[in-house]
Length: 466
Picture 1 (cartoon, rainbow, N blue to C red):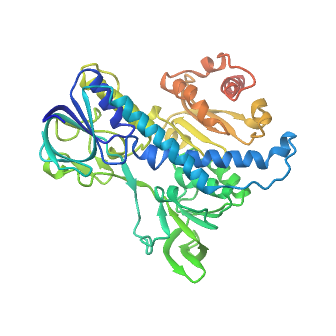
Picture 2 (picture 1 turned 180 degrees about the horizontal axis):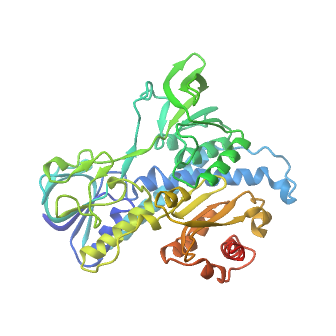
Picture 3 (picture 1 turned 90 degrees about the vertical axis):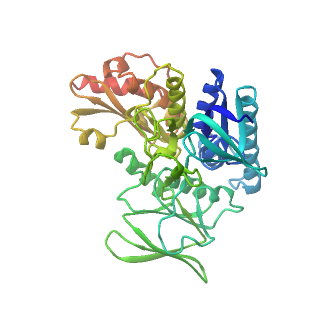
């Protein structure tokens, strides 16, 4: 470790690691400090990757259960689920990815990595405390904060009980709960509700809003909610949790319904997924001029904080909180710091995938956002019931919606509900980011039979109606 660095990067997740690597590749002396067990951040260890490993096991289980629909005669429909094997596979993948990231990073002699903590002493000095080693003080010219976020626990009576888990803790659970109560109907709550339902849990999902997935396209979210109900997941919307406590028969969850009636249900385990908050504890921001709001560290449109030589990106600056968004910010920030001006990411062009069953993916504006901005828009639709690929895979329950401006037919949003929607977001993001028109989409030649041909078919149908 050196005494002086060009850049101090705090946080080795999907935002901090790319920006540190890019700066070091340009010959800058960079120190990357990560508080966790390895590089990867929440996405690798507590979010995106482990939850998708669970989801993949659930998908394989459903395929085995549905084998008869494809003419495959299984000797039995009962499949033994080895939970410890699933957990072992998860740990092996996480270890492989984390160690691989460190090995790649360490090939750059300009980049030092410390697994430990960092605290600002002032705007140009920090105290670095490696795990199980003595702290050392370093000097830096500029710093980048990419410390991510952590689960939020609302002030509900009983949330401190050991049987109430957050999204990180549930990934380490050593058994499949018989009865699982999930508080929060956002992406994490929906994904895990379906996963544990497939694994055999009796799942109840509580959501305070009128419908799940409040930030997604409402029409598609309602269709997903209907699918969950068909799969015997109890979805209770418009309700507020009053308290959680242990009783002789398990966990008692008391809530207030949309009709202001008090009701209760029993469970064995409660999963709390009520949002995330920026992770800034212990950074010593009080020793700098960096300002915070309840939503995160305050930055300008160039990710610069109120301390001129300190920058911040990713979850720690607030919404949107996605791994790929933090990566895009980090890469753009690195180029700008190196004197290679590029546009910073535009939230209107951000894409997202909810790995539900079926997947719900989106890029650009929703109908609600378009109406709020007084945009005169129309919608091109495609029902996957008529889609060859969806029929072949027995996943024909879904819809594509393309939002476009009424005057010049410029595409401003694409929303997809279908299994495989995540793989469609590359083309969808390109269409929205580049301002593609409906006419350009319609004349694009897509391979058949694939899900992606739904884009051109939806566009052609909409143009025929004009």
